[in-house]
Image (cartoon, rainbow, N blue to C red; front, side):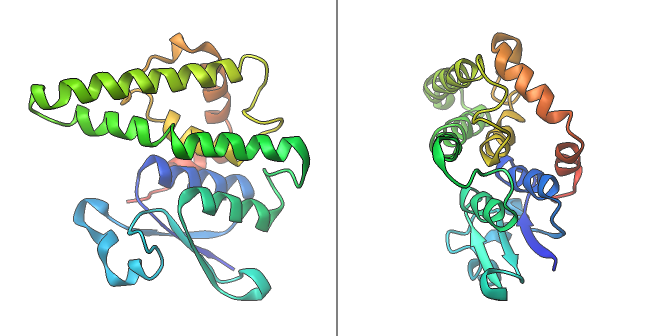
Amino acid sequence: MTIQFFAFDTPNGRKISVALEEMGLPYEVKSINITKDEQFSPEFLAISPNNKIPAIVDPDGPAGQSVSVFESGAILIYLAEKTGKFLPKEGAARIAVFEWLMFQMAGFGPIPGQVHHFIGLENEEDKRYGLKRFMNETRRLYGVMDKRLATRQFFADDMSIADFAILGWAWRHQRHQVDLNEFPNVKRWYEMMMARPAVQRGFAVALK
C-alpha cells in the first residue's frame, strides 16, 4: 500500500525521499508548505505533534494497522525495519548506524540550520556573531565526517540510513559556504551517493 509522505523541499524532507526511493517503497507526496505555515494546521498536527516536516502515514503498519510517524530519524528507522534494508539487525554494524544517525540528528543538522538562519539576516551586526559561531562548528562537523570517511566508503560498514540522513544536509554544503574540496573524503562519498539512480530520484521528486 502507498505511504503518504508529508514534506517540503528541505534537507530533512530529502532524507526521507531518498530513503523511500532506495528502499523501493511506493509513496505519495503530500506537500506541506512551511512558508505558508501549513505545518500548523490541525490536520497536520494530528500526524506530527511538533508541527515539523517530514512525517509519514503508512496504511500497512505493524499488524496491518495504519500508523503515523514523525521526526526524520524515527521515520528512517521505521522504514529500515519495515523493509529490512539499510540497518543491520545486530552487532557493531548496527551500533555504528545509530551513532552516525544520531550525529546527524544532534549536530549535522541543527548547527548548519543555524548557518542558514544567520546568512538570511540583513543586519550585519545581528548576523556577524552567529555566523562565526555556527560556521566554525559546521566546519568542525565536516572535519569529523572527513576523518570517519578516510578509512571507509560509508559512515557505517555498509550504506545505511545514516548515509541518507547526513546526505540530506550535505546536499546544502554550498549554502553552508563549505567547499567540499577542503574535505576530500566527504566529497568522494557525496559524489558517490549523488550518482546513485535512486538518490537522484529522491532529490528530483517534487516536495513543494
